[in-house]
Image (cartoon, rainbow over all chains, first blue to last red):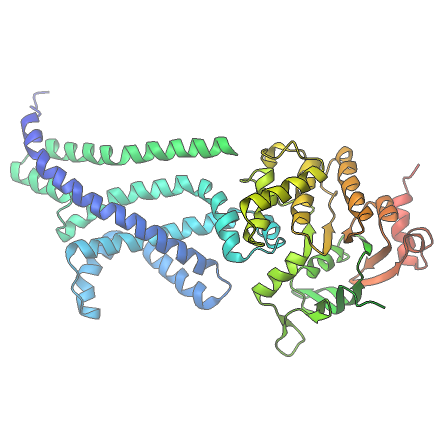
Length: 221
Length: 258
């Protein structure tokens, strides 16, 4: 092997890449947060007895799950101005796409979790005179949370990496900066390895925390 | 004659095409202890579960203190039951389930306090005091901080009884409370139920424990094919049944007696 790995280039690229990392985090954290909140409401609609709530939520969920995210992002950027006359900034289009996509996936995670709780838990609480909203909040969700944690961790990891798709809308996130640098210096191996390493450093602490939390919750029961 | 606490008129229940309850008329007076017996699939659990609206009646009315629950709705006699009204009813008509249905993520004490906090709106200290009192009454004063998963079936069912009692219901429904217990654990649960009987509580019990039903009940109902086949005192129904069907049912229990 006579390839000379250029460490100096890596060091020189770091400031630019870290600026990209900041944008990645700005995409990642809010899209997870919005996605979870919207996904929870969607799952309630999905589980509702009323077809007027159930059918549209089902349609929404399948639409976002069964089409490529890349196209969703492009679509929000290019089709929105034509359809509703609003031109989103590349960042806003990417954030919207990631958040809505996440909401569809987390809606299914919530639904599966809620349905996995035995009917007897609802009955036990209902027999005390508790209202549906209280039962959900105090009895069902605390039990669901534990079961859903691994699935949500997975989702969060996926979204962190999915946010790299925003580079096609020239959002200056980590992947965009990495591709820019690697084509500028013709050193894709150095730059992209560094980019991958930064993604790893970004994601790993989260998975570690999640695994710890899982163990702590398991110990409690 | 006093007004019954609970009055059921022409109660109907369908599961799809299956006609489970075929027009039951029935009332409960204060202090009555009613044992409901019958074969599996006779509708006895469904009947009990209609009384606190774990199952929604398909037709007929259920009145609490003379006031019919729900509002008429549609042409086929079905009623609409707003959640807030059902919550009030369930506060007054408690239930103990075959499968206990304790909340596994809460301690024994928290299980009993839950309804007091969220339904009755009691303060933490007051709820705690009452929950401890009820748990001591069922002999579990030393298990307050245990999780249900660490308890035996008999202990779990006693927690469930304490949880229902803490709400101070006027009527208590028991849906086969000992059917999922190992035989040696049945006694401790039945003793707690008998203790409640001695306090003069109004209770309904669906059970296969005919011996217990005989000692416990002021009235026994034999339910078959969705109707009350025979109703009377424990002596009438269990010792001197008049209906052929009741006799055949009871014989299955004595077949292997010794």
